Image 1 (cartoon, rainbow, N blue to C red):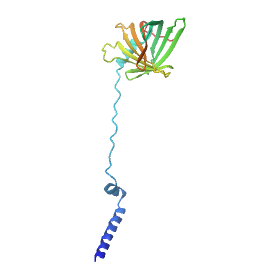
Image 2: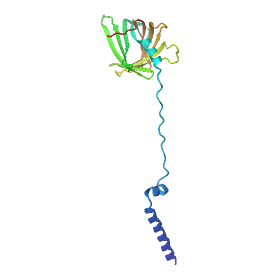
Image 3: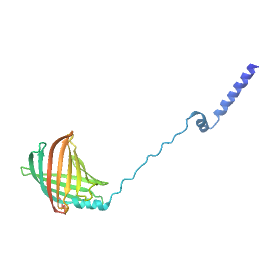
Image 4: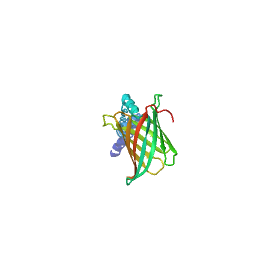
Length: 207
C-alpha cells in the first residue's frame, strides 16, 4: 500500500515537472527562476545655459582693437627685471562663429620683436584659446555689474607645471586697462608681470 502511494506521489511530481517544461520560457523565468526585473532610470541631462548675445557683444567691444603699453616683469622677491614695450592686436571674426585671434608683440632688450599668435573660440560665457605653448581661458567676473573686470588663466604645455593667473581691469571709458599677472608652479610664486595699456584703435587690423 505504501509503495503504491509512493508511486502515485512520484507520478504526480513527474507530471508537474513535465508541465513546467512545456510552459512558455517567459512564464517559467518570471515565476520561478529569475528575480524581479529592475529598470535603470535614464540619465538626467541639463541644457547648456543660454548666452546673452548682447552681453557677448559688449565683451567683444571692450576687448577688440590695438592696445599699446608696457610689460613690467618682477621676480618672486618683487625686484623689477624687465620693462618691455608692447603692442597687442585683438580681433573677432565676422563669419558668425565668434572666433578670436590675438597677436602679442613685445620689443625685447636687444631690439628684436617677439611675436606670439593665439586663437580661440567661445564656449558659453568662457573664451577658450591656445597656441603652440599654452592653453587658457578668459571670463568676465559675473559678480561685477560693470563688466569691467575679468580673469585670465593660462597653463604651459611644456610639462613644467607653470601656470599664470591674471586680473584685468578696463577703465570706464574703455580706452585703457591694467593687468596683473602672477606665474606659479606647485603653489610657489615664480614671478609677476604688471601691464599698463592704452587702446589706440578699435580696428585691430591685421598683423
